[in-house]
Length: 127
Image (tube, rainbow, N blue to C red; front, side, top):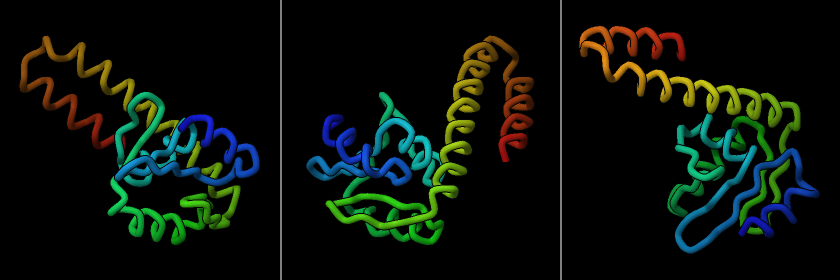
């Protein structure tokens, strides 16, 4: 699956590459940052996945945002600057999520009321 992704990515560096396996589509590495940012999918092992039943919704949203992608050997062209902007946003979201997870681990030892107050402030900051 990774080999197929890498092969397609060479000529489509400014597009999200989706690889279909079974009943799911997968996006890897930098593309997973963008998909995670836009759809709030969780990144696991440098990839995100979604069921094939979500294909139309995902494609419609990417078209609306003018982000190019490759899916089922079809290429949809978009704006590479927009791709890069969402990549930057997605990368920052991933970094922020890691920081939040680390902070939550540390704060679990605190009083629950203090923990809730701190968490709420962090979530407000994330908006």
